[in-house]
Image 1 (cartoon, rainbow, N blue to C red):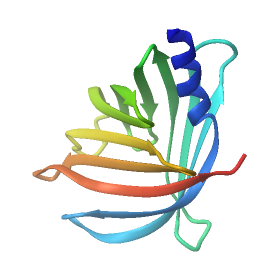
Image 2 (cartoon, helix red, strand yellow):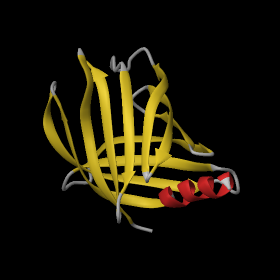
Image 3 (tube, rainbow, N blue to C red):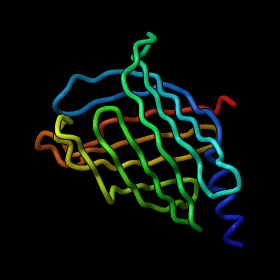
Image 4 (cartoon, helix red, strand yellow):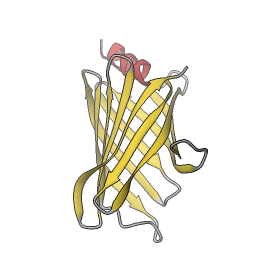
Length: 155
């Protein structure tokens, strides 16, 4: 029966999701962006490849990108990410009722990367959308909400 749970989690995310987002943080001006998440199967393994890209709202100016993998084991979800900003993230979490709560368990940073201390993510599926939230600890601010986007499946 657990294999059906795994397939359900993978099926729920698979595809291309796109939509608007808003960013804010106590140390910066609010901003709007467009986000695209792509989740693709890797054969029969309980793994999805993951890519994320954002652009400044109303333009084709890139803001951010990251790539990695979503790994599912029963109802446990693992997210492995590499970013061109010099960060790597490993998240472990669970899925219940279409909500993926992902907490950071390992964080790597290059010598020139910003001094971000932690990152926490949530993906929540509702009727037609994937709502993406990110919190971070940076510049003396602990676990503050930073990003929210509402994405619609495109393919």
